[in-house]
Image 1: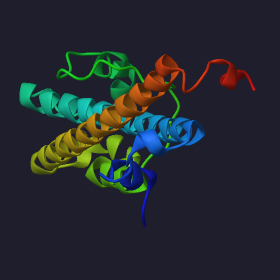
Image 2: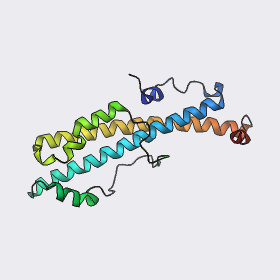
Image 3: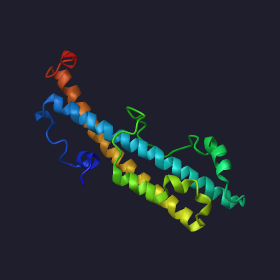
Image 4: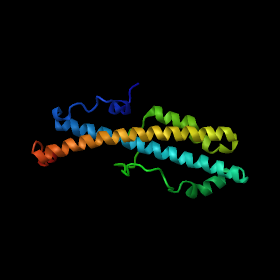
Length: 177
């Protein structure tokens, strides 16, 4: 099954932008933005689950054992608070919705540690917790790589639109029609 992510990630996706109608370029930009928004949402989901797994592992290392579900919920604001993240592109998503979430990547995240498993982390062995952490980290790296490709696509599409406006091939008035 081919997804939007597969299509926009394909090297042939952009082709010769100078030959494409402006409406098609705008549609491609919109599609890329929806896919990037989906990847951004998925990355936030991964980071949240990874933070929860790391918190459970830290509790075990300190010898305080697993938290009860009530304690976990009480500590969620601290666990999920923004922390230092690896350097990224610094781009904010166009929307905070879910966008076009790739079902294969989403299934991988759920396989690493699904929503139901988060509340039952105390039942996981140390090894299972470590494996979940490693899998989430690997998926996050892949999602970040996909996002970089999407940013390149968006930059190319935006540059072509800007070029057309600057050269007079397109006009702002055409947006009002």
